[in-house]
Image (cartoon, rainbow, N blue to C red; front, side):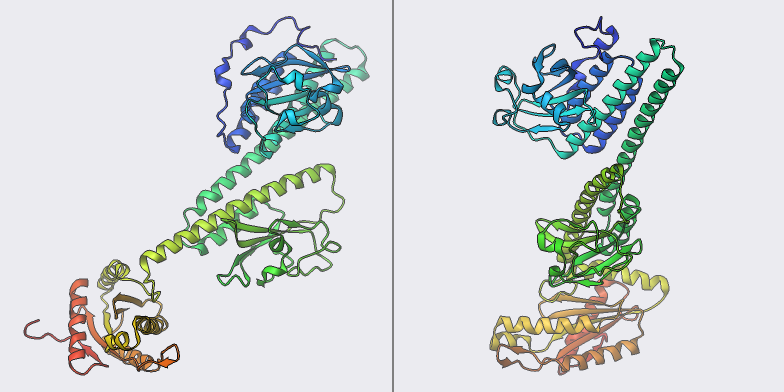
Length: 562
């Protein structure tokens, strides 16, 4: 039986010198820091030589890991709960004993499970009279060793508070490590008692080695969790550097493969029409991969929450999943951004038949990791889409969708410099809609907008990969063609006239007048050697085209007063 605090001779004076100020918790600790703290605690516990040291380490760690205002270390003492030690902002019950049947720590040890209570006065398991003199409003308590509890760790808050799932898991991990450390001390004590029987000594040694292996395993698991958190943080920060959403697909596949090495998957994104989702990338060679799925074909999208099968051959499966003889379990995780579904993460798991309890626990941990991963992916993709939208708003004309004047001025200078380095030419077309004012006067400004939009569509479809189509202002457009000869530029301008001549615009039930355009052509470096002079030359050529009858292309020619 482990000695109680009251029976302990003296605390090590060096242990008492710890300052209480060092144990105050900043409640903004992130999970990475908490796991690192837990790793340090586990290492300290592995070196502890007595129960007093264990209790000192644990009561301080419990507060630091959960942000609690108080913590207690409770020992099972027959039919009573012995509150052996505490660390709190005000006195609690240190040194007192309470019957197991009326104490929440007794309930935790009897039922071998945690107790999470947000309001202690609303829970019938709490002896209210014992709590009224204290600051406690909320508590969380976990058993030390679930198979046959030997005690409990309690954490308390002065204000109503509901601990997070991560905090409870950290508290449970602390309790498991405490159990191992206490068993170590007990085994060391038994060895020190000098038991003579060889068989007994061998058994004690075996238990000690097993306890150490368990401690090493716990440490390894915590290291692995820390690595997972590091990868998640790295994924989040790397996604923030992506300029375009296409860059993110390969990045997501790489990190999901790292975090879930035994899982294959597909990333789907919702089409702007919201009528279907499209496969963007896959990894791990999934057995089932539909390129296009409809929202109503996925149970996860219907429910708005994760849907997971244990056995795809017998469980209810989504319509987009086609089971076969090699089918395994799968998960569908909706990707939410601002309460809106932007995509779907489809994951195929390895065959999980005949799982051990340890593998089942690992699967539960993996489910938590998958949820966190989906949140990071959804947030990252949403931010990239938002940045793309803002970038398009700054560089695109709202009416036509073509580039605007600001983009032209930034890009044309660069294109001219590139042509200069390569000793090639560049053509610039200044385009104006003939008699545009008549559309506004006769049919109204909405009809004028239709005409501008229609010409914008023609220019967008007419542009080559390296061409730049911009709305310059009003009914004027600029069309830049890098690395093109004068003769070819004139041919393309004529082809543009022909494309415009095929436009037939309507405003409501009325057919609008046939659209024609006048075009001024200027070449770099033939007519100008810088951006401003090149635009001015094409503008001059445009006015020459208008003055000579419109609906034509005129090459820039110097005039006397130019």
